[in-house]
Length: 148
Image (cartoon, rainbow, N blue to C red; front, side, top):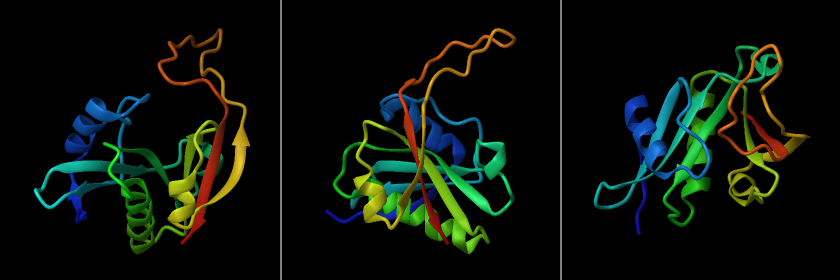
């Protein structure tokens, strides 16, 4: 099977994420999105890249993969992580990061040249002064990054 990259709109990415992603809704926005298509032009995966969610990382030179999902196509995640890093580098970013659940292996990230940087305890965003409904996994997460 031959896979190719394709620039896609935020709307296209959000539709795919809504239909395929295991545990997250689409992100609120993005800087750019990339699609992965097969030889029949069927969309097999997407990656959305935006500003870092953590304020401490939002220095103007760091990009964050806020969503990545595929339909399980072989090497799809690695291809999209690599493409996101190359595109961010071409735009002048010097670093790219993403977060995955602690229960995920990170094999696709390692294959794309990323390294594990840190771990977080996970948990809820809900606090008494601003209650929220948690619609995402609350387990610990690991941050992966790559210098560009």
